[in-house]
Length: 114
Length: 114
DNA sequence: CTCTATCACTTTGGACTTCACAGCTTAATA
DNA sequence: TATTAAGCTGTGAAGTCCAAAGTGATAGAG
Image (cartoon, rainbow over all chains, first blue to last red; front, top):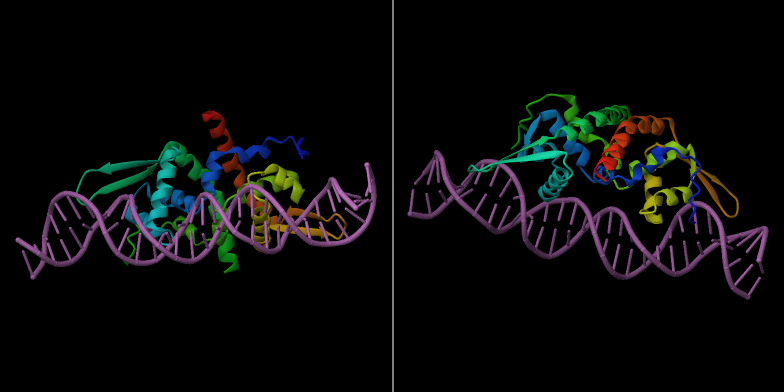
């Protein structure tokens, strides 16, 4: 099995090595990126309202991952009640832009089959 | 909480409703699409070799989902040992094309941080 | 002065996913 | 007779995700 008989030497074959792809391949990550991209800055509650299928714990975990990956910033204001604002980094914005054709396609396809 | 205070009426907000997005947000789906796109037609074993982190059962399940979603065709030849060839449909190819900028970006980013 | 609402989370125990690994098929080779 | 090939399916265990309840501090209502 070793030797790895890949017929193409196309570098696109190696997209699998990516951490970011791993992250993108988790539930709600693209949705979150999309929502943040559209809003500019978003608060936790707004995200919840937009993605109600996701539990708060999952949402929280995803936001952490996105922050760790350097795609999102978290700005916390020490007020009561607390306020936290999420925003895409430049990197995150770049991703969002490249993701847009995919999302548009998904949307068209959905409305075609619905 | 009802009333849903979305500041934008941007249609891009509704990308969440998509089935395809749900599928794309599962582990290895983008990887599979990528590998099939690069190869044209692929056999199961080749996919396994390219995506060794995925178990055969998961791979099998993903291929089923992709077929159900109309993104992939499965051609089975009744030989011994069996041979099955996977290929993208036109829809799948369209997705792959739109996915390419994302994958390229992911790759660049990875090699930058590595 | 207690009571409730606010917001962004954590925590919890259970359900659902994904895992690695073994087994199945059948026919040609060693 | 045993092994090999390819493409799966089944297993129990590990990991992920869920809804629902709880946490924290304070501002305003009664």
